[in-house]
Length: 225
Image (cartoon, rainbow, N blue to C red; front, side):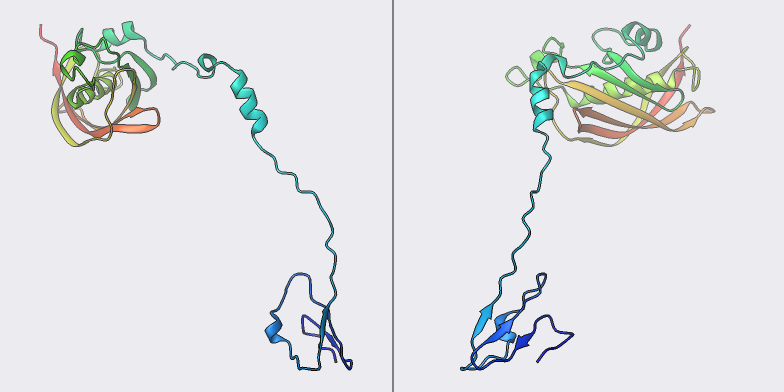
């Protein structure tokens, strides 16, 4: 007997029940109505042999290994160099903590870097055996990047100084050590020109890891005559 809706057919015989299994579905033998006088033979359906080719990145890895490590990474771009930064910020050694501006959107945001080296004057005391950049100096460096945004003509003009008015939600996620490059992004959230108050959000990175973040409230003050 045969069932048109079934996934297998049974051919009656005295001692043989031939079962043709569908290639995509294999029902358990417990579903078959077998008796003592019934024997089962499976008819094997050969599968078509096919070759599966897997693409790998071995060629890219090999090509990358052939390039010397000193040539694999590009330098940060320069939007403002140290001389241009000194024309904007009033800070000087040893408290100028911004080396280069790598991105600047007038009136909105700035991204700058601080190269942290063992020659920085705070490392002999913080700490002699484990040089770690103090968290307060990370916050100061980020604030200076914010000052580059605030003291531009698009916001407040370059003839003013700025001061901290408040710091909120500051978190230090990971230590910054000698040899790191601190990448800081400061974004202007709100500016009250009448009172000279600016609210900014900042994040600092080493590589792609956030090491410090927080909200900054800064006030502008006119330059003393």
